[in-house]
Image: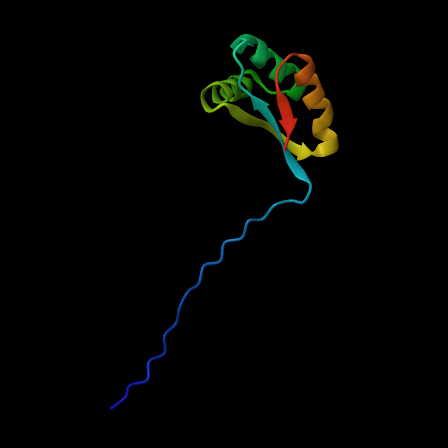
Length: 93
């Protein structure tokens, strides 16, 4: 005797929702810039508060890099140039 079973299954769909055109301003670790210099540069160029700049600087130091800002390329380009002109390696990815 065959039994009919109605099986209900929940399927969870995860999507990577990204806003088209949003990029990361990435800052990289080096062996010559001081913590204080990087912190002050992030405050001046990216308008970070002191705590945010310090946290980013520690991530840069210990992880090798940190995304310090997200935005459109046109918005990030002058920030990258400001960071680079301070002698700190940065790129838009």
